[in-house]
Image 1 (cartoon, rainbow, N blue to C red):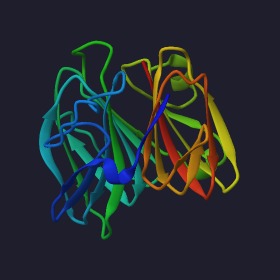
Image 2 (image 1 turned 45 degrees about the vertical axis):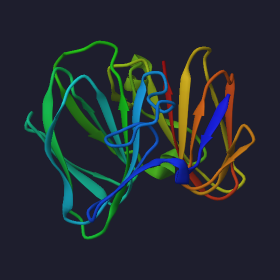
Image 3 (image 1 turned 90 degrees about the horizontal axis):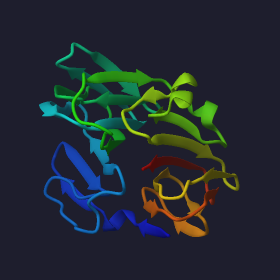
Length: 234
């Protein structure tokens, strides 16, 4: 089963500093059919204008993954962390029992990013923040695991999260394809950051999404140079 979620069907919020599109119910956007997908709760497609951002605000009991598509985002939090994550790289904040953080675009250009929230296996725990560089050349033509709750993935360099889930990404040249095996009972969600691609034959355009389950394998074929992000969650 694959449900295509076209970009123009997503929830939206527009302000002078932020243009947000919501793949799932979030903030003022409510759709009972788009509340979550397994443990995946939020997938926001944000464009943040220069010298603006999200002021300090609290989180708890959520794994928050930020995938930067263009520009950069600067993070600071109540744990004393501060870091700048550039396009193609990823940051993870495991909110645990509670943390306050802020995210700003301090650049001279707009920043675009995906913010992905995954519900943790258990509530509470110490909060955590980390970031890692994942050069796009290293994931050309293949899926690379960026964040994961599985020890083997973490040993290979994936950022840790507190759920048996994976966040993966790939860049594909036109005509290239990549496949991913989806275990029975799992929920996958794919977003096309740019380009064109088919997912098991279903066409996706730029910034479209696809909710996937009960598909033993996911085959993604690029109809134009493409960048994809994929979550595999329980």
